[in-house]
Each structure stands twice: as structure tokens, then as C-alpha cells.
Image (cartoon, rainbow, N blue to C red; front, side):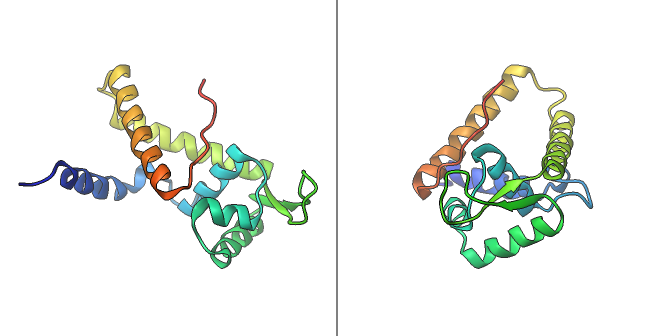
Length: 149
């Protein structure tokens, strides 16, 4: 008997291939989009905090943050709480790029769900949130979410 999770796996694989939902050519790389999203929601973060949040080694995050700094999307600042480690903060340019990218993705999702009711979209979003929060619970890496509104 085929388990229902086999269907979830297959549909998730198909979802991941739809590039137009993630970005427009020449805008933000996926890793930069996720990095900026996390810093925006959580506030300034050190390499160590980013490593814990993403489950990635510091060298990987050093490369990602260095690229984001070269592009002008983040800047290094002293720890606002007085700690020793310097932290990364999203710049105005980074915030604009993130907003533009997010709007592009939302427009793509609007096209896909144009024939869906608001209730169907809300139900789908609730299931996605539940799925993600269960993954976060199992991994021990909760992801902060922006205030709804």
C-alpha cells in the first residue's frame, strides 16, 4: 500500500522545481532571500546565531554573508546588546530587494491561485505553516514569523 506521505514527497519535489514562484532572474539568490528574511524578522544576528538558526557551518554562512555584504544587502554592526560578536543587519537596499522579491513571489502565487477562494488559500497556508512548524519542532530550529496583519 502506498502511504499518503509518498504523495506529499512527490508534490513537494514538484513544488521545488517551480522557479517562477521563488525569484525573477537576476534578483536575489534563494540563500540570500532566506538569509535576509531571517534577519528582518529576528533582527541583527551573529555568524554563530545564523549557524544555529540555519543548521549550517560557520564557513558556509561566512561565504553567504560576505556575498550579501558585497551586494550591499547587509552590514556588520556592533552587537546592540553589548556582546562581543559583531552582527549582521539588513540594509535599506537589502530591505528593498527583499520586498521586491517577496512581491514578485506573491504575484506568482496570486496567478496560481487566481481561481481559489480566500478560504482555500487560508486553509492551504495553515497546512503549510503546520508542516513547517512540525519540521522546525523535530529539527529543534524554530523559525520566527512576522506579525500577521
